[in-house]
Image 1 (cartoon, rainbow, N blue to C red):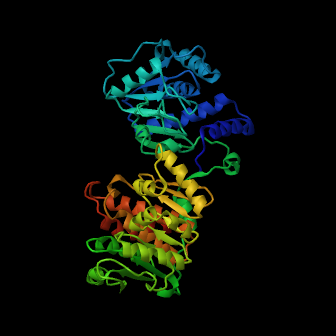
Image 2: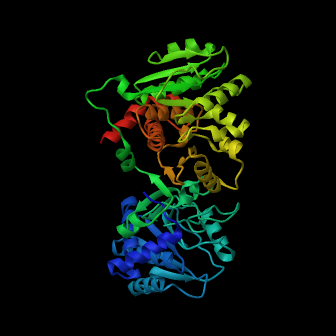
Image 3: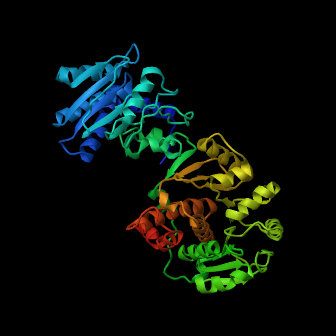
Length: 501
């Protein structure tokens, strides 16, 4: 699914109105009907709704929602906040239509006034500001939103939580409506997918309001979400007449004294993800651990407590390097020598990333198409700090293009950056996956996909999606706090089953 900017969404609205020979008011009614339908599906008929409406088209949506809910027997009251001098034409039309049904359904609120004494079972619907807002809220609106945030009532935002921009991270301390749910029209907004702002949106529901498919298909964007349909299109199912050689060899170069668990998790994940054969290159201290922990894998040894030779690890079709590797001087030399000889894309994680931070000149020696998998702090150590997570994504896009590599920036909504400048947001996964070893599992999964012949981009997208989905499946029956990286490995098979469907 494409992610459009606020300006592109407005252009899509305008194109839809022109191409469909409808009015902007008709499109507003279509959006309101979708929102009202979602509200009626989500809440019982005995729930009451207060709709907070601005003076622009988002307010018009809210007024139309109030009218539709009233027609369907719900108790509603709309409050129009007069923070300016003029209504938009569609908002004014929506106000008149609601007033014609009864003056008690809508009230105008003058600057300096607030809503109080709201019973706890009332749902507050936020339709004050939409995607057109491009500056922080100030004055009465700032204090009004702050006041509403203090109310215990459940809150639903229409298209955007008021005060939030679609395309940027607000300054620290900015006032934004805190929604429990957001009904977003047609597209995710980037601000829903970043840690500084995503919490304001609550649960995001994407509502199809029939925007023009031709415009959507033909309009360029660099931002996308990874959907199940995307992954099904990339999936390479096994064939009946095949053998282990058909599915390649995954090589995991990992582990050091005290860190063999990382190597074990990566190797197990590679095996579960379908590599025909898995080879683990580990230091001598980890040999017994690997042989007993994953008997399905071959095991070769270099050094005693730390790996000091990667060149003789053997040939492989997919290579993951870094989990638990350590950054000892001998390992750094071995890593640099390996990069000088290696010609195939690598999955670079954990301590291999830390060695890139220690020796930045090695970045230019990465094989083309390599896949880097940093978390935000690892990314900072290599490429420097940024003002916020959205700027970090932009920096990652630039570095992916600069070094002809893929960068998987791990977060709640992990992003995959390509050498062409595309950015894919992954929607699977959960907070329970914020646990030691989760990244090692991802490394093994992507290495196994490379071994099976997936192109690096396809391996990155598929690996990230299935990794998050396996985490979601593993969460069933337990809590975020109890989820372990090994549980993710166990659930990989069930994650694959969803792609078959």
